[in-house]
Amino acid sequence: MTRKIALMTLLAASLLATACNTVRGVGRDVQSVGQAVEKTTN
Image (cartoon, rainbow, N blue to C red; front, top):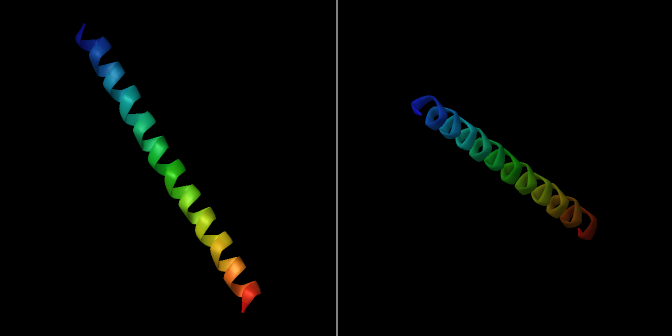
């Protein structure tokens, strides 16, 4: 039973870490698009 809980906790932690990386990557992409638009308008 304890092993099952530990495995579930590890799986949940890895999913949360992956989600943080994905959100961070999207933020960088949006930022780079914004900078490109800003450069073309100037």
